[in-house]
Length: 376
Image: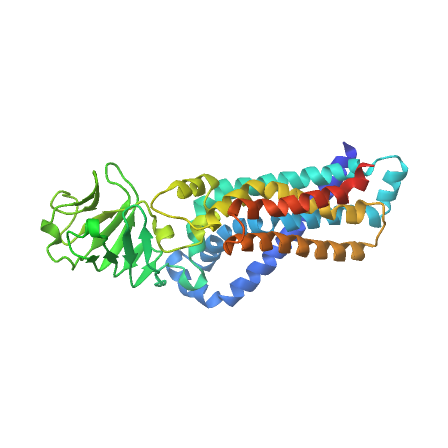
């Protein structure tokens, strides 16, 4: 227990030092690069300090998610190298303490960090993902983004528009190309603005179109139905609609409609599974790939640590700088394998499930073989 506390404390200190150093370096560089935008936005948000705290408070959570595997490995290397440099590792081995007993606390710490990162991805990041949609040049979310036409696969309506704004989930100049079974109003519905509204009470989720100019008599037209479900609601039956407004029912959210990577990258795994099962979406291969990768992330994180520990704790004694250099090269190779397999799924060469599992099938046996001397 004393060994575990000693090594665990050293690794925890190393983790905090490396994390704070890297995060501080990134945030300071980014803040000075975008300081003009922050200053221009400070007056309406109560000061520069509040703007920076709100902007980087969310991004430090993202930074932990992105760097935790590498920093966990770096802290393990630091703790073990510290033992080696002060000849404490030699003393422990001479006292009959096996290598696996020394590595135990390092592996447990890495597993705890990996589980904390998984909880962060599932619980915290989905709550603040909207903040990542706005960069320093668009803190208000008022800058129009390109809007690529996208289908609602359930209703077969093609959504088009001049642009989209993340503030208020708005579409500028929406133009909806209607399929033949929903063309009673004409080939398309055009409006001045579209607004995404989540489901509330008896009203389903969908898009509120305002200043409708085609068809011109939208207020007097009956609702459009697809089977037994209403797809386009008008003022003739919905009293809450104002003149020249209509409501298009859709299960495709604003983030999904504009093709934002935020919803897939920072949504919880449960939400991603629901998106795959959503008949309106027709998701690409990156979503099932991300689901499998989320489930395998803790195993890959531990594989990375097990690949690095033998560089210091193995029977071949190396200098600290040699071990660090080999660790950097091994980490680069590790991520090349992971990203290469994922790229094969993006190119439709491998299925998403196989592309997600391939790095583990390749790297886990290698990690077990590399760590074998520690168990002897």
